[in-house]
Image (cartoon, rainbow, N blue to C red; front, side, top):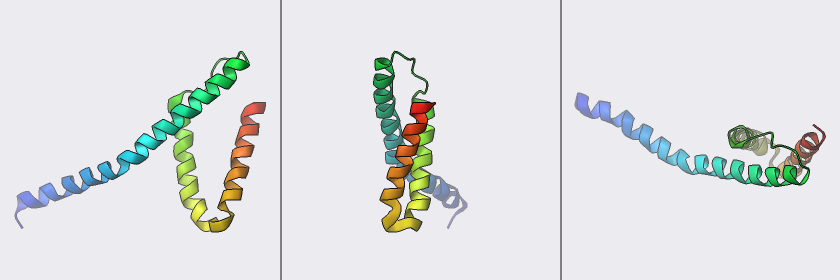
Length: 97
């Protein structure tokens, strides 16, 4: 193996890793966008200004993905009930705050 092929190999692997993460990045942006639209609609009905934008909501979406990945595997069959509870608590917290 030449020194040139050793230098090219990590860049190809890094590019492959970025390509593999692209669908997740698109999903995060799409999820944050539709939450922003629904939230803006609800806040518009209440005649309030929108508090959170897409970038902030994207952070919450990433946190949800990480939580689902870490906690979801440990809880296995109980995860859907726990996830629904977390959504309900989050919705109530947003409503009251």
